[in-house]
Image 1 (cartoon, chains in turn red, blue):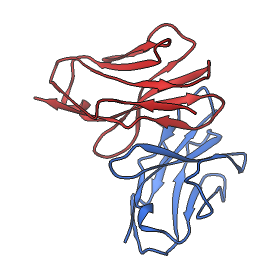
Image 2 (cartoon, rainbow over the protein chains, first blue to last red):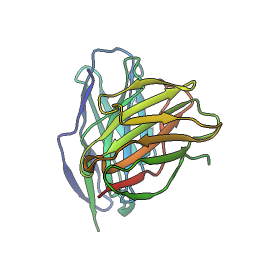
Image 3 (cartoon, rainbow over the protein chains, first blue to last red):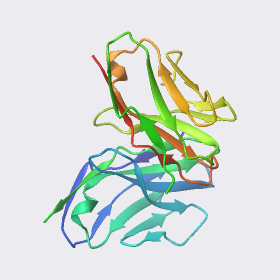
Length: 114
Length: 114
């Protein structure tokens, strides 16, 4: 069974600073995908970034980047130059093993201090 | 930009009543999903649907739940005889393929059972 763990229930960062959100996962599959979703107060789930397990290069989307450590089964999200609009719940999720379902972590609430 | 739309945004129902949550997936997508998020908890997979039948379901998706694609555009989740513990945010999602693409989420329906 796949599991996703986010060990930081809450994080805070000063505006314009950099913050890293942690995520670990467990799977026996070799082919899978990892995602970070953002859930603002409106509660919509918005895709931030995705990573294919077969790719060694870390994914990057503007101010968002990941540190994917396949052997350690770690998938952290780095947000650079934090902005007030980045304040949200962030969920790490995994898709793979032939299953069609996303498995989510518990989420990390990110607060941006002005 | 195409998006998944859900109606209603908020539904209040009495315990024991039936509710139908509606979703319009992105038009060229073939795979459809329902997820649930109880307040303060992680997002949980309920069911995936492809080619007019359920392709995978979780333990949560018992006989109380059913899904249907009544026409070419709508995808519905029916909850029979609602219980207090069914109160949650319900997310519909769709994807063009089941595995190597991310799911696009709707804005969610907040269901409150009283």
